[in-house]
Image (cartoon, rainbow over all chains, first blue to last red; front, top):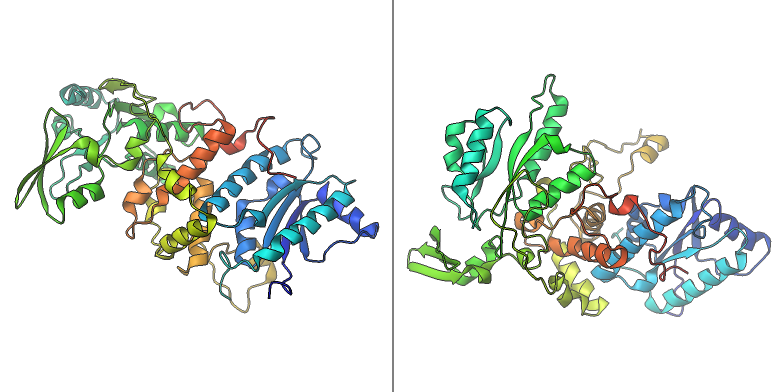
Length: 140
Length: 343
């Protein structure tokens, strides 16, 4: 079962850096697993913890939040707020016993297509042995 | 010791002068073991005010209610409200001022110090009594509580039946007040986050089993939300009852009114609700323990908030409710915030 299991990752990518980074990976024909569902948001600071919990509730096996490097934010300080908030979300998810591998954050700039592919590759590699995420999932 | 006569005198004075519109305090309740909240409007009634370790309630919620009522009135009485505050309650006032929900002038704070004690835990006492019904509660000078039941008197040191949060409290006296009763007793709290240790030391699998079992019981009565002085949003994200999806509902309408958390009390929804409540209280919860006290199914809700308090303290060096001039936890940041979890 675990061998055939393909995890589903929901990635919240900020419009100005990470989304452009994933685009670069695409147009450069870099190879990376197709398990990721990218959702472009205006800023990593606009990712509400609700989005993250809801992604897990709707059956995501992993959630990635990605934004610009500190200091590069299009809105100057959005990613600093995100950094604080996501740290709290991570602590909380950890506390209730969700595997820490299931939730990640990264800084990906528009030029870092390779880094993006590596992050996704590693994420998929981490998620495969864990199996499907059933803890927060709604029974559909 | 808190000189209750002095407090009553001050309460009488400010009521007579018309400085405050009413005073919220504690009084002896007729049936329950714990004191009950009281609203005092006449100077001669101030003799009803009491102070002892059974005053468990956080009265700040009534300030929030009054403020919300004032918004709807045509000619609101804008005089301040007098209120008795313990250490934890005074921090709740601080957070409300910090968030500009109330002004400092809206309240007249009669601060009472818990000194080296705190408030009692009803459940701990019930355990000690082994099912005996409380008829009368008294306190002696040696810090014992004397409970009279049908089968006679039981004498218990107060320290043994203090609420868990009081044992971890870092503000046993009010941090903001107009007049203070009792002494500012400094005391050492060795482990301010002790109640978390047991869960944190477990593997995440065990932790999950614990929380799944606890949160599965939730009946979504929202008592925790109703009693919380920090839950003052007009529309809660957990409520979407006024919105029904019919075949005629357009995609646009659906997109504008997203039902983030469904009403059915199943595990996934319960976790969604409690997690988002915990996140919304991050850096705001002052650990008054009211949510846990109000919970009809005994979910240890306090721990979720305590965990985030700990995270704020350890990661961001932020302590809730001590300074109302500081920016709040999630509306500020520092360059040196930890980012070792980010790739």
